[in-house]
Amino acid sequence: MGATSHTDIRQKLIERIQSGEWPLGSRIPGETDLAQDYGCARATMNRALQGLASEGLIIRKRKGGSHVATHPVRQARITIPIIREQVETSGQAYSHELIARKVTVAPPDIQASLRLESGSEALFLKTLHKADGAAFAIERRWVNLQAVPDIMDAPLDTVSANEWLVKSVPFSSGDVIFTAHALDHALAHIFDANERDASFTVHRTTWIGERFITTMTLHYRPGYELQTIL
Amino acid sequence: MGATSHTDIRQKLIERIQSGEWPLGSRIPGETDLAQDYGCARATMNRALQGLASEGLIIRKRKGGSHVATHPVRQARITIPIIREQVETSGQAYSHELIARKVTVAPPDIQASLRLESGSEALFLKTLHKADGAAFAIERRWVNLQAVPDIMDAPLDTVSANEWLVKSVPFSSGDVIFTAHALDHALAHIFDANERDASFTVHRTTWIGERFITTMTLHYRPGYELQTIL
DNA sequence: TAGTGGTCTAGACCACTCA
DNA sequence: GAGTGGTCTAGACCACTAT
Image (cartoon, chains in turn green, blue, yellow, red):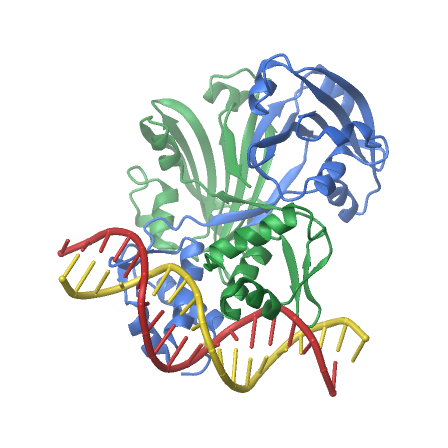
Protein backbone atom coordinates (compact mmCIF):
# COMPACT_ATOMS: atom_id res chain seq x y z
CA MET A 1 0.00 0.00 0.00
CA GLY A 2 3.05 2.20 -0.30
CA ALA A 3 3.51 4.93 2.25
CA THR A 4 1.94 4.23 5.60
CA SER A 5 3.05 7.19 7.63
CA HIS A 6 0.31 9.04 9.44
CA THR A 7 1.13 12.17 7.46
CA ASP A 8 0.70 10.46 4.12
CA ILE A 9 -2.48 8.77 5.20
CA ARG A 10 -3.83 12.06 6.42
CA GLN A 11 -3.16 13.61 3.06
CA LYS A 12 -4.92 10.78 1.26
CA LEU A 13 -7.92 11.15 3.50
CA ILE A 14 -8.06 14.87 2.82
CA GLU A 15 -8.08 14.13 -0.89
CA ARG A 16 -10.99 11.77 -0.48
CA ILE A 17 -12.89 14.55 1.23
CA GLN A 18 -11.91 17.23 -1.25
CA SER A 19 -12.77 15.03 -4.22
CA GLY A 20 -16.31 14.72 -2.96
CA GLU A 21 -16.07 10.98 -2.37
CA TRP A 22 -16.99 11.74 1.24
CA PRO A 23 -19.42 14.66 1.10
CA LEU A 24 -19.90 17.18 3.87
CA GLY A 25 -21.62 15.60 6.83
CA SER A 26 -21.30 12.03 5.60
CA ARG A 27 -20.04 9.25 7.77
CA ILE A 28 -16.64 7.81 7.01
CA PRO A 29 -15.51 4.28 7.82
CA GLY A 30 -14.28 3.40 11.29
CA GLU A 31 -10.65 3.33 12.34
CA THR A 32 -10.39 -0.41 12.12
CA ASP A 33 -11.68 -0.60 8.57
CA LEU A 34 -9.58 2.28 7.35
CA ALA A 35 -6.49 0.82 8.96
CA GLN A 36 -7.07 -2.40 7.06
CA ASP A 37 -7.69 -0.53 3.80
CA TYR A 38 -4.45 1.37 4.08
CA GLY A 39 -2.51 -1.51 5.56
CA CYS A 40 -1.45 0.16 8.76
CA ALA A 41 -2.00 -0.33 12.45
CA ARG A 42 -5.09 1.15 14.05
CA ALA A 43 -2.91 3.43 16.18
CA THR A 44 -1.47 4.96 13.04
CA MET A 45 -4.87 5.52 11.51
CA ASN A 46 -6.02 6.94 14.81
CA ARG A 47 -3.26 9.47 14.71
CA ALA A 48 -4.12 10.51 11.18
CA LEU A 49 -7.79 10.88 12.04
CA GLN A 50 -7.07 12.82 15.19
CA GLY A 51 -5.05 15.20 13.12
CA LEU A 52 -7.98 15.82 10.83
CA ALA A 53 -10.28 16.23 13.79
CA SER A 54 -8.02 18.80 15.43
CA GLU A 55 -8.08 20.80 12.21
CA GLY A 56 -11.83 20.69 12.21
CA LEU A 57 -12.20 18.68 9.01
CA ILE A 58 -13.93 15.77 10.66
CA ILE A 59 -15.89 15.31 13.84
CA ARG A 60 -15.44 12.18 15.88
CA LYS A 61 -17.74 10.66 18.44
CA ARG A 62 -17.57 7.40 20.28
CA LYS A 63 -20.13 5.01 19.02
CA GLY A 64 -21.28 7.67 16.57
CA GLY A 65 -18.30 7.21 14.29
CA SER A 66 -16.46 9.90 12.34
CA HIS A 67 -18.23 12.35 10.08
CA VAL A 68 -16.97 14.94 7.67
CA ALA A 69 -17.60 18.32 9.25
CA THR A 70 -20.56 20.21 7.86
CA HIS A 71 -18.76 23.46 8.51
CA PRO A 72 -15.34 23.46 6.99
CA VAL A 73 -14.45 25.93 9.68
CA ARG A 74 -10.79 26.20 9.32
CA GLN A 75 -8.94 27.69 12.17
CA ALA A 76 -6.17 30.13 11.69
CA ARG A 77 -3.21 29.94 13.97
CA ILE A 78 -1.89 33.31 14.82
CA THR A 79 1.46 33.63 16.42
CA ILE A 80 1.10 36.38 18.94
CA PRO A 81 4.07 38.46 17.96
CA ILE A 82 6.76 39.89 20.13
CA ILE A 83 7.14 43.42 18.93
CA ARG A 84 10.91 43.48 19.02
CA GLU A 85 11.08 40.43 16.74
CA GLN A 86 8.39 41.75 14.52
CA VAL A 87 10.43 44.85 13.87
CA GLU A 88 13.76 43.13 13.61
CA THR A 89 12.61 40.42 11.21
CA SER A 90 11.49 43.14 8.84
CA GLY A 91 15.06 44.35 8.87
CA GLN A 92 14.50 47.47 10.92
CA ALA A 93 16.15 48.56 14.12
CA TYR A 94 14.03 48.18 17.23
CA SER A 95 14.02 50.56 20.13
CA HIS A 96 11.56 51.54 22.79
CA GLU A 97 10.93 54.40 25.10
CA LEU A 98 9.23 54.43 28.48
CA ILE A 99 6.90 57.39 28.32
CA ALA A 100 5.06 57.06 31.59
CA ARG A 101 5.36 55.00 34.72
CA LYS A 102 3.27 55.48 37.80
CA VAL A 103 1.69 53.55 40.63
CA THR A 104 -1.88 54.60 41.09
CA VAL A 105 -5.43 53.44 41.56
CA ALA A 106 -6.59 51.84 38.34
CA PRO A 107 -9.80 52.84 36.62
CA PRO A 108 -12.77 50.56 37.21
CA ASP A 109 -12.55 48.61 33.96
CA ILE A 110 -8.91 47.80 34.61
CA GLN A 111 -9.69 46.79 38.18
CA ALA A 112 -12.26 44.41 36.80
CA SER A 113 -9.89 42.96 34.21
CA LEU A 114 -7.22 42.29 36.79
CA ARG A 115 -9.67 41.27 39.52
CA LEU A 116 -8.24 43.94 41.80
CA GLU A 117 -9.88 44.85 45.04
CA SER A 118 -11.49 48.21 44.53
CA GLY A 119 -9.22 51.06 45.44
CA SER A 120 -6.00 49.03 45.27
CA GLU A 121 -3.09 50.36 43.31
CA ALA A 122 -1.47 49.00 40.19
CA LEU A 123 1.49 49.89 38.02
CA PHE A 124 0.75 51.81 34.85
CA LEU A 125 3.24 51.82 32.00
CA LYS A 126 3.14 53.54 28.67
CA THR A 127 5.72 52.46 26.16
CA LEU A 128 6.46 53.60 22.66
CA HIS A 129 7.89 50.95 20.35
CA LYS A 130 9.92 52.22 17.44
CA ALA A 131 11.17 50.83 14.15
CA ASP A 132 14.14 52.67 12.72
CA GLY A 133 13.33 55.53 15.04
CA ALA A 134 9.73 55.96 13.85
CA ALA A 135 6.76 55.12 16.01
CA PHE A 136 5.65 51.56 15.39
CA ALA A 137 3.21 50.84 18.18
CA ILE A 138 2.17 52.31 21.47
CA GLU A 139 1.43 50.20 24.49
CA ARG A 140 -0.56 51.08 27.59
CA ARG A 141 -0.21 48.47 30.27
CA TRP A 142 -1.44 47.89 33.78
CA VAL A 143 0.42 45.41 35.96
CA ASN A 144 -1.05 43.77 39.04
CA LEU A 145 1.55 44.47 41.73
CA GLN A 146 0.15 41.83 44.05
CA ALA A 147 0.81 39.21 41.40
CA VAL A 148 4.21 40.50 40.26
CA PRO A 149 5.74 42.69 42.98
CA ASP A 150 9.26 42.21 41.60
CA ILE A 151 8.53 44.37 38.62
CA MET A 152 9.04 47.44 40.79
CA ASP A 153 12.76 46.65 40.77
CA ALA A 154 12.99 45.88 37.07
CA PRO A 155 15.05 48.20 34.84
CA LEU A 156 12.16 49.00 32.55
CA ASP A 157 14.03 51.66 30.67
CA THR A 158 16.40 48.99 29.39
CA VAL A 159 14.19 45.96 29.03
CA SER A 160 10.64 46.48 27.84
CA ALA A 161 7.93 45.53 30.28
CA ASN A 162 6.74 43.00 27.77
CA GLU A 163 10.04 41.17 27.69
CA TRP A 164 10.55 41.39 31.42
CA LEU A 165 7.17 39.87 32.09
CA VAL A 166 7.72 37.16 29.55
CA LYS A 167 10.95 36.07 31.18
CA SER A 168 9.71 36.39 34.70
CA VAL A 169 6.21 34.97 34.28
CA PRO A 170 6.44 32.56 31.40
CA PHE A 171 3.62 30.60 29.88
CA SER A 172 0.61 32.32 31.24
CA SER A 173 -2.85 32.00 29.80
CA GLY A 174 -4.64 34.92 28.33
CA ASP A 175 -7.23 36.30 26.05
CA VAL A 176 -6.83 38.57 23.08
CA ILE A 177 -9.18 40.91 21.30
CA PHE A 178 -8.47 42.49 17.94
CA THR A 179 -10.22 45.66 16.89
CA ALA A 180 -9.88 48.63 14.62
CA HIS A 181 -9.54 51.96 16.35
CA ALA A 182 -9.84 55.41 14.86
CA LEU A 183 -6.84 57.58 15.61
CA ASP A 184 -7.45 60.34 18.08
CA HIS A 185 -5.51 63.54 18.11
CA ALA A 186 -2.73 62.23 20.30
CA LEU A 187 -2.22 59.01 18.38
CA ALA A 188 -2.20 60.81 15.07
CA HIS A 189 0.53 63.02 16.41
CA ILE A 190 2.61 60.12 17.69
CA PHE A 191 2.38 58.22 14.43
CA ASP A 192 2.75 61.36 12.39
CA ALA A 193 -0.36 60.30 10.54
CA ASN A 194 -3.56 61.75 9.29
CA GLU A 195 -6.17 61.95 12.00
CA ARG A 196 -8.54 60.07 9.72
CA ASP A 197 -6.39 56.95 9.62
CA ALA A 198 -7.10 53.84 11.65
CA SER A 199 -5.02 51.79 14.02
CA PHE A 200 -5.04 48.02 14.31
CA THR A 201 -5.50 47.44 18.01
CA VAL A 202 -4.87 44.51 20.31
CA HIS A 203 -6.16 44.10 23.84
CA ARG A 204 -4.59 41.38 25.88
CA THR A 205 -5.03 40.17 29.43
CA THR A 206 -2.86 37.44 30.88
CA TRP A 207 -3.12 35.34 33.99
CA ILE A 208 -1.86 32.17 35.60
CA GLY A 209 -4.59 30.22 37.30
CA GLU A 210 -6.18 32.77 39.61
CA ARG A 211 -3.34 35.26 39.43
CA PHE A 212 -4.18 38.05 37.02
CA ILE A 213 -0.92 39.49 35.85
CA THR A 214 -1.38 42.29 33.38
CA THR A 215 -3.69 43.82 30.85
CA MET A 216 -2.64 45.99 27.96
CA THR A 217 -3.76 47.80 24.87
CA LEU A 218 -1.52 48.02 21.85
CA HIS A 219 -2.15 50.44 19.02
CA TYR A 220 -0.20 49.73 15.85
CA ARG A 221 0.66 52.44 13.41
CA PRO A 222 -1.70 52.87 10.48
CA GLY A 223 -1.01 50.41 7.69
CA TYR A 224 -0.01 47.59 9.98
CA GLU A 225 -1.19 44.15 8.84
CA LEU A 226 -1.50 40.91 10.73
CA GLN A 227 -1.08 37.99 8.41
CA THR A 228 -1.79 34.33 8.89
CA ILE A 229 -2.31 31.20 6.88
CA LEU A 230 -5.22 28.86 7.17
CA MET B 1 2.68 7.65 40.56
CA GLY B 2 -1.02 8.27 40.22
CA ALA B 3 -2.42 9.41 36.92
CA THR B 4 -0.44 8.43 33.87
CA SER B 5 -2.55 9.81 31.08
CA HIS B 6 -0.76 12.01 28.58
CA THR B 7 -3.02 14.91 29.54
CA ASP B 8 -2.13 14.69 33.20
CA ILE B 9 1.53 14.29 32.47
CA ARG B 10 1.44 17.29 30.19
CA GLN B 11 -0.09 19.36 32.95
CA LYS B 12 2.58 18.26 35.41
CA LEU B 13 5.29 19.17 32.96
CA ILE B 14 3.75 22.60 32.43
CA GLU B 15 3.82 23.13 36.17
CA ARG B 16 7.49 22.25 36.33
CA ILE B 17 8.11 24.89 33.70
CA GLN B 18 5.91 27.51 35.29
CA SER B 19 7.40 26.94 38.72
CA GLY B 20 10.81 27.80 37.37
CA GLU B 21 12.24 24.34 38.00
CA TRP B 22 13.02 24.26 34.28
CA PRO B 23 13.96 27.83 33.33
CA LEU B 24 13.51 29.28 29.88
CA GLY B 25 15.98 27.78 27.45
CA SER B 26 17.11 25.00 29.75
CA ARG B 27 17.34 21.43 28.64
CA ILE B 28 14.83 19.01 30.04
CA PRO B 29 15.39 15.26 30.45
CA GLY B 30 14.92 12.90 27.53
CA GLU B 31 11.76 10.99 26.81
CA THR B 32 13.10 7.76 28.20
CA ASP B 33 14.09 9.26 31.54
CA LEU B 34 10.87 11.16 31.95
CA ALA B 35 8.82 8.11 31.10
CA GLN B 36 10.60 6.23 33.85
CA ASP B 37 10.10 9.09 36.32
CA TYR B 38 6.39 9.21 35.70
CA GLY B 39 6.00 5.47 35.33
CA CYS B 40 4.56 5.46 31.85
CA ALA B 41 5.56 4.13 28.45
CA ARG B 42 7.81 6.22 26.26
CA ALA B 43 5.03 6.55 23.70
CA THR B 44 2.84 8.22 26.30
CA MET B 45 5.55 10.61 27.33
CA ASN B 46 6.21 11.29 23.68
CA ARG B 47 2.64 12.29 23.18
CA ALA B 48 2.70 14.64 26.15
CA LEU B 49 5.91 16.25 24.96
CA GLN B 50 4.67 16.61 21.41
CA GLY B 51 1.66 18.40 22.78
CA LEU B 52 3.89 20.90 24.55
CA ALA B 53 5.99 21.30 21.44
CA SER B 54 2.99 22.00 19.25
CA GLU B 55 1.93 24.72 21.65
CA GLY B 56 5.37 26.23 21.44
CA LEU B 57 6.30 25.67 25.08
CA ILE B 58 9.24 23.44 24.30
CA ILE B 59 11.45 22.91 21.30
CA ARG B 60 12.54 19.43 20.38
CA LYS B 61 15.45 18.34 18.27
CA ARG B 62 16.85 14.94 17.57
CA LYS B 63 20.11 14.39 19.31
CA GLY B 64 19.81 17.90 20.71
CA GLY B 65 17.11 16.95 23.22
CA SER B 66 14.17 19.04 24.37
CA HIS B 67 14.55 22.58 25.61
CA VAL B 68 12.12 24.97 27.18
CA ALA B 69 11.37 27.61 24.57
CA THR B 70 13.14 30.91 25.13
CA HIS B 71 10.18 32.73 23.69
CA PRO B 72 6.96 31.55 25.18
CA VAL B 73 5.32 32.39 21.91
CA ARG B 74 1.85 31.19 22.43
CA GLN B 75 -0.27 30.81 19.42
CA ALA B 76 -3.82 31.92 19.30
CA ARG B 77 -6.33 29.86 17.44
CA ILE B 78 -8.84 31.93 15.61
CA THR B 79 -11.91 30.35 14.22
CA ILE B 80 -12.50 32.07 10.93
CA PRO B 81 -16.12 32.94 11.38
CA ILE B 82 -19.00 32.37 9.04
CA ILE B 83 -20.84 35.64 9.09
CA ARG B 84 -24.30 34.17 9.24
CA GLU B 85 -23.39 32.18 12.37
CA GLN B 86 -21.62 35.09 13.88
CA VAL B 87 -24.77 37.14 13.68
CA GLU B 88 -27.12 34.39 14.69
CA THR B 89 -25.13 33.28 17.74
CA SER B 90 -25.36 36.80 19.05
CA GLY B 91 -29.12 36.39 18.90
CA GLN B 92 -29.73 38.66 15.95
CA ALA B 93 -31.48 37.93 12.68
CA TYR B 94 -29.17 37.48 9.72
CA SER B 95 -29.94 38.63 6.21
CA HIS B 96 -27.91 39.63 3.23
CA GLU B 97 -28.35 41.62 0.10
CA LEU B 98 -26.58 41.27 -3.21
CA ILE B 99 -25.69 44.80 -4.16
CA ALA B 100 -23.65 44.24 -7.28
CA ARG B 101 -22.88 41.35 -9.57
CA LYS B 102 -20.97 41.62 -12.79
CA VAL B 103 -18.55 39.73 -14.97
CA THR B 104 -15.72 41.95 -15.98
CA VAL B 105 -11.99 42.26 -16.34
CA ALA B 106 -10.49 42.36 -12.86
CA PRO B 107 -8.09 45.09 -11.77
CA PRO B 108 -4.41 44.15 -11.82
CA ASP B 109 -4.04 43.43 -8.13
CA ILE B 110 -6.97 41.03 -8.23
CA GLN B 111 -5.61 39.37 -11.36
CA ALA B 112 -2.39 38.80 -9.47
CA SER B 113 -4.14 37.41 -6.41
CA LEU B 114 -6.11 34.92 -8.45
CA ARG B 115 -3.28 34.19 -10.89
CA LEU B 116 -5.51 35.20 -13.77
CA GLU B 117 -4.16 35.65 -17.26
CA SER B 118 -4.14 39.34 -17.93
CA GLY B 119 -7.32 40.54 -19.54
CA SER B 120 -9.40 37.55 -18.51
CA GLU B 121 -12.74 38.12 -16.86
CA ALA B 122 -13.86 37.26 -13.37
CA LEU B 123 -17.06 37.50 -11.37
CA PHE B 124 -17.39 40.44 -9.03
CA LEU B 125 -19.85 40.35 -6.17
CA LYS B 126 -20.67 42.94 -3.57
CA THR B 127 -22.74 41.75 -0.66
CA LEU B 128 -24.13 43.53 2.34
CA HIS B 129 -24.51 41.38 5.45
CA LYS B 130 -27.06 42.55 7.96
CA ALA B 131 -27.85 41.88 11.60
CA ASP B 132 -31.41 42.71 12.61
CA GLY B 133 -31.67 44.76 9.45
CA ALA B 134 -28.65 46.96 10.20
CA ALA B 135 -25.46 46.78 8.19
CA PHE B 136 -23.04 44.36 9.82
CA ALA B 137 -20.34 43.87 7.23
CA ILE B 138 -19.77 44.53 3.58
CA GLU B 139 -18.03 42.07 1.32
CA ARG B 140 -16.37 42.66 -2.02
CA ARG B 141 -15.45 39.43 -3.71
CA TRP B 142 -13.85 38.31 -6.95
CA VAL B 143 -14.38 34.74 -8.09
CA ASN B 144 -12.18 32.96 -10.58
CA LEU B 145 -14.63 31.65 -13.17
CA GLN B 146 -12.14 29.24 -14.63
CA ALA B 147 -11.85 27.56 -11.26
CA VAL B 148 -15.54 27.62 -10.33
CA PRO B 149 -17.65 28.02 -13.48
CA ASP B 150 -20.75 26.59 -11.76
CA ILE B 151 -21.15 29.70 -9.66
CA MET B 152 -22.74 31.43 -12.66
CA ASP B 153 -25.81 29.24 -12.11
CA ALA B 154 -25.93 29.64 -8.34
CA PRO B 155 -28.89 31.52 -6.85
CA LEU B 156 -26.74 34.10 -5.13
CA ASP B 157 -29.67 36.22 -4.06
CA THR B 158 -30.83 33.36 -1.84
CA VAL B 159 -27.60 31.76 -0.70
CA SER B 160 -24.68 34.03 0.01
CA ALA B 161 -21.63 33.55 -2.18
CA ASN B 162 -19.68 32.69 0.91
CA GLU B 163 -21.95 29.79 1.81
CA TRP B 164 -22.25 28.59 -1.75
CA LEU B 165 -18.51 28.45 -2.14
CA VAL B 166 -18.05 26.71 1.18
CA LYS B 167 -20.44 23.93 0.23
CA SER B 168 -19.21 23.59 -3.28
CA VAL B 169 -15.48 23.93 -2.70
CA PRO B 170 -14.87 22.67 0.79
CA PHE B 171 -11.59 22.62 2.63
CA SER B 172 -9.52 24.92 0.55
CA SER B 173 -6.34 26.53 1.75
CA GLY B 174 -6.03 30.23 2.09
CA ASP B 175 -4.36 33.19 3.61
CA VAL B 176 -5.85 35.90 5.73
CA ILE B 177 -4.78 39.43 6.50
CA PHE B 178 -6.31 41.54 9.25
CA THR B 179 -6.06 45.29 9.15
CA ALA B 180 -7.74 48.42 10.40
CA HIS B 181 -9.30 50.60 7.75
CA ALA B 182 -10.53 54.13 8.08
CA LEU B 183 -14.10 54.56 6.90
CA ASP B 184 -14.49 56.42 3.69
CA HIS B 185 -17.54 58.37 2.77
CA ALA B 186 -19.40 55.44 1.29
CA LEU B 187 -18.68 53.05 4.14
CA ALA B 188 -19.65 55.61 6.73
CA HIS B 189 -22.96 55.98 4.97
CA ILE B 190 -23.59 52.25 4.78
CA PHE B 191 -22.83 51.72 8.45
CA ASP B 192 -24.59 54.90 9.45
CA ALA B 193 -21.44 55.82 11.32
CA ASN B 194 -19.20 58.75 11.84
CA GLU B 195 -16.72 59.17 9.05
CA ARG B 196 -13.95 59.21 11.62
CA ASP B 197 -14.65 55.69 12.82
CA ALA B 198 -12.61 52.66 11.82
CA SER B 199 -13.51 49.32 10.32
CA PHE B 200 -11.94 46.01 11.22
CA THR B 201 -11.03 44.55 7.86
CA VAL B 202 -10.25 41.06 6.63
CA HIS B 203 -8.68 40.13 3.31
CA ARG B 204 -8.86 36.51 2.37
CA THR B 205 -7.73 34.54 -0.65
CA THR B 206 -8.49 30.85 -1.01
CA TRP B 207 -7.19 28.18 -3.29
CA ILE B 208 -6.92 24.43 -3.74
CA GLY B 209 -3.53 23.36 -4.95
CA GLU B 210 -2.97 25.47 -8.03
CA ARG B 211 -6.59 26.48 -8.44
CA PHE B 212 -7.13 29.97 -7.11
CA ILE B 213 -10.77 30.25 -6.22
CA THR B 214 -11.66 33.60 -4.80
CA THR B 215 -10.36 36.67 -3.07
CA MET B 216 -12.37 39.02 -0.93
CA THR B 217 -12.30 42.00 1.36
CA LEU B 218 -14.63 42.22 4.30
CA HIS B 219 -15.22 45.44 6.18
CA TYR B 220 -16.93 45.03 9.54
CA ARG B 221 -18.99 47.76 11.08
CA PRO B 222 -17.21 50.00 13.60
CA GLY B 223 -17.03 48.46 17.03
CA TYR B 224 -16.62 44.92 15.80
CA GLU B 225 -14.23 42.80 17.86
CA LEU B 226 -12.48 39.57 17.03
CA GLN B 227 -11.85 37.60 20.18
CA THR B 228 -9.69 34.60 20.80
CA ILE B 229 -8.14 32.70 23.65
CA LEU B 230 -4.51 31.78 23.98
C1' DT C 1 29.14 8.12 15.20
C1' DA C 2 26.19 8.06 18.84
C1' DG C 3 22.34 10.06 21.14
C1' DT C 4 17.77 11.68 20.83
C1' DG C 5 13.29 12.29 19.04
C1' DG C 6 9.86 10.31 15.37
C1' DT C 7 7.11 6.77 14.30
C1' DC C 8 5.06 2.15 13.51
C1' DT C 9 3.05 -2.19 15.37
C1' DA C 10 0.05 -5.47 17.76
C1' DG C 11 -2.60 -6.11 21.40
C1' DA C 12 -5.29 -4.73 25.17
C1' DC C 13 -8.62 -2.31 28.00
C1' DC C 14 -11.44 1.66 28.91
C1' DA C 15 -15.19 5.26 28.25
C1' DC C 16 -18.51 7.31 26.06
C1' DT C 17 -22.92 7.34 23.65
C1' DC C 18 -26.35 5.77 20.50
C1' DA C 19 -30.08 2.71 19.92
C1' DG D 1 -25.91 -3.47 25.53
C1' DA D 2 -22.85 -2.91 21.84
C1' DG D 3 -20.10 -0.26 18.75
C1' DT D 4 -16.77 3.23 18.21
C1' DG D 5 -13.12 6.21 19.43
C1' DG D 6 -9.44 7.17 23.27
C1' DT D 7 -5.54 5.66 25.19
C1' DC D 8 -1.74 2.86 27.21
C1' DT D 9 2.06 -0.55 26.66
C1' DA D 10 6.34 -2.75 25.19
C1' DG D 11 9.27 -3.29 21.74
C1' DA D 12 11.37 -2.14 17.51
C1' DC D 13 13.51 0.46 13.84
C1' DC D 14 14.41 4.81 11.52
C1' DA D 15 16.16 9.69 10.76
C1' DC D 16 18.15 13.56 11.96
C1' DT D 17 21.97 16.21 13.94
C1' DA D 18 25.26 17.65 17.45
C1' DT D 19 29.70 16.44 18.76
